[in-house]
Length: 105
Image 1 (tube, rainbow, N blue to C red):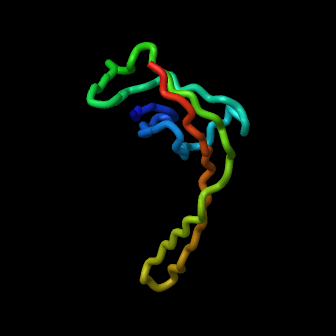
Image 2: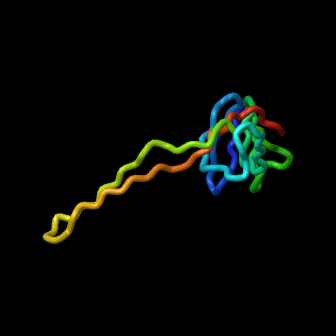
């Protein structure tokens, strides 16, 4: 059984017992329960429920594990021109790890 949920403008495939990594959920703290109401699709055995736009009465319950930063991403900008220099930048994106506990219909 799996579901597709929408959060922060993106859609994620979730399964019970798996960890979901999303953009940082600012309103929740580690250890709290989080509920996703925007369920786009649910697949249970051979039946598929597709929402228009969301499945009514369906929700996914998870527990926030942590807020952390992802690995560093390095970007380099280089132009082979006289008087132009190489520019290096680094970025680490915040994420939230959520343990999916239950998918309800």
